Amino acid sequence: MFRPVSITGFIFLGFFILSGCQKQQQTRPPEKALQAAQELYAQAVDADADLSSGPCLSNGLFSGVSPEDQWVVDIVHAPRLDIDNLPANQCAAYRNGEAKHFIELDLDGKLIKFF
Image (tube, rainbow, N blue to C red):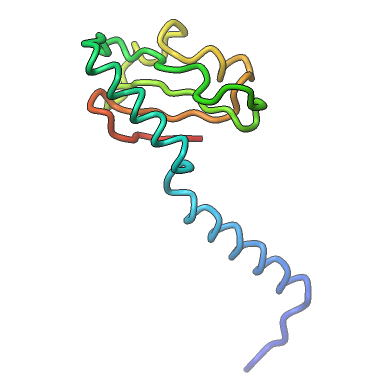
């Protein structure tokens, strides 16, 4: 038999559906940030930079933006190694709150993850 659902139930269901949709849309970082990260990676490769330690490539992709709009770029191993967790190989601007977003690329320049 059909049971009426309370308005609270509908509101909860709506929030649940919307939160799921938002997460599904977040499959890639903003195109401008990803493009800048990949260009930076290409420059490092062209310069024969040693990326084997998983260094931070950039503590800030964009000049003159607030921390909420700033992105860092970090190289990591896939799968991740202990060396990737060393502070010397991580982007200080993200750890210090000077940048709220980061892009992790693997040693081949492929997107691993972002926040």
